[in-house]
Image (tube, rainbow, N blue to C red; front, side):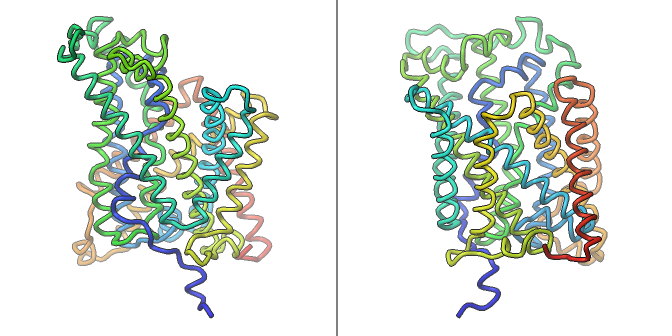
Length: 456
């Protein structure tokens, strides 16, 4: 007969190669493959500066998270830290907010799967592929954490190989080293209105859109409770975040904007497809469709994983039904996975019943949720440090460099991003819906406390 620990403890089945590729894949979204056209049109080639600046902020956030995760590797990660170092309400808000963030994201991703499969099977109803993707990813997650890690490993590898191939091919075209094709050079970066065609304002306004390309990178911390050798594995994954961002986003966009005038990007199809077709790969559109399909499945796979671990962590804290804090014989939170999948099943129907604008409003909650999550990570780390004695601080295995200045810099940057979102009419709705969602969660929390029950 199993003891209580065996029924509530997650299995540490994620290995170093799983975490390394998962952390690489987390920084690569479908938007990059489709050209990042909207951000490029806002800032022009200056978008490269926005990616570097945003990357620095994300790197600081990840180092702050890593400092706590390596000292206290628990499932739920930043939700647990918010609960411990800010307060129970902060933990409740962060956990349920992050769960909903990923549920909404996954709703969009499983819908995208249906659209991508329509490229090959135009006569099959879209909802069938969306449902099939949801069932497949849920089954993989419920089998074992190793099965999840293995699938995510190959999904991430597919995206990485595609991006690296595009960068290499693009570099050869720029240098004129591809047989029969004249060198393009890099003059397109400044010949069409300059490197900053819309001025510094264009770069600043693009930052809110750019920074959300990194949504999901904090998932590395969520894996802390299921990683073998967290100290070595998490530190290695986080340390390379900034360089991954430079390589995958900055290098690929540098190549794309060197080959094609920035104002034309996105008007004639994906620049990835155009680049591969330029060297004679006629099936480039089909190949890219397969890659973006794996990117969507990857996001859905990771989203179910993250959402389920959040519910598990909330149940452990008494902020969700206790049965969600139980694990299966294979060491995964089965009930939490099923509840998340059920919520996504509703999402499949909502995609057809809810008008597009309303669905965009709901998605804006996820957008605002990302800022909330990152801010909570930084505040938790500041509070965490205050609980330590000087001798304990010296013993921290993985310190955030230049603390506390870097923490305050990153927090100030997040406040600036929220301000820019309020300024921009396209993102303003997120700053209305997001706080309303948090107010609703707070009301639920207070009502639960008035009932006098900690565990639901």
